[in-house]
Image 1 (cartoon, rainbow, N blue to C red):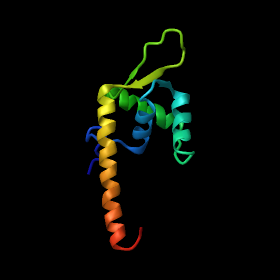
Image 2: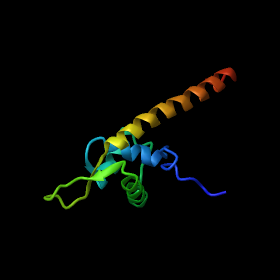
Image 3: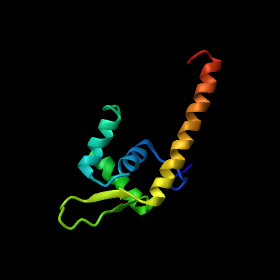
Image 4: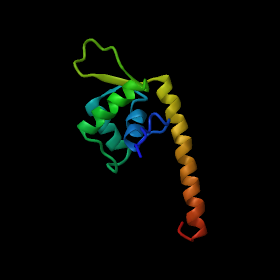
Length: 111
C-alpha cells in the first residue's frame, strides 16, 4: 500500500509542524534549526538535509514562501496565510489527539 504524503492529506509531520511554526516570522535555514531547538528545549532537532527536503515540500504546497531580500545571501522563508491556517488546524487536530489519549489512559489509571 503506497504511503500517503501527509501534506496532501492536510496534516503535518512533526518536522513540518516545527518548521512551519518557526516560520510565523521570517527566518533563514540555520535560524530555523536553532529556533526549533530553543522552543523545544533541545527535545527536537532537525538536520540540514531533513530541513531542506521539508522546506521544498512546504514551498511546493505554498505553505511557506521565499522572502525577497536582495541584500542577504541567505535564503529567508516565511509562512504564507495558507500555511498559518493549516498550522491552526494542525494545533486543533493535535489537541484532539491528546484528549483521546488522556481519556483512554485515565480509564486505565495511567495519567
